[in-house]
Length: 253
Image (tube, one colour):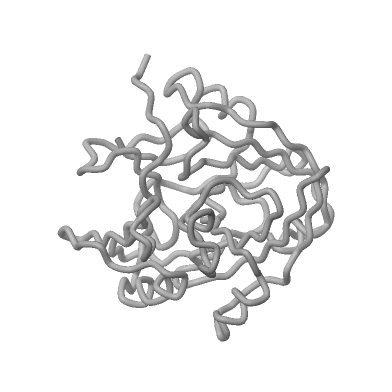
């Protein structure tokens, strides 16, 4: 059995034009913390939360499409999604989708950056912990989760729990037209399964597993780095290895 990983510490992002990607991320309040070799480490300008690590690469990325099994989004909270999108005038974005699951009410929209880098903004009446709890006047939070599409939500979740001792949250099953629309799926509504993996305290950065039980999308072809979300990093220092989970999630330890 491996030792517990806890929550991920960073998201590794490939960039064919690192300067453009860093400039795009700065619009959400991320600033350069330091540069190490080919890696530029960014953090929320409040100095808290998981880092975003931009790595130069040659292979361009594309936005998530249809039912592809791959990283689908970095999620950021916002207290006012209309004001947030207004501050991002000129960026490519989806319509705002309204999602209501019991007492939870969310408005979400996807903003697409260089190499198809997907950032999803979430306005929620029941959001989890983020820098907005201590600084509610901020427009954007630190990264609260990364969404990764896998073929089998339950099998993938069990692997992470059994092998790396992550804590599994509530399982969700829904078919909401608004979700299908802002994800750009080819039809609406689409059945979706989700669950969350994190440390026991449900600290960010959380890993959200997404699967389309009625739609078997293609997996990424290989593990060579390309533009967009490429891997999760579970260590603070330099990683010693990169691993791919059974569901195709790349992570570094």
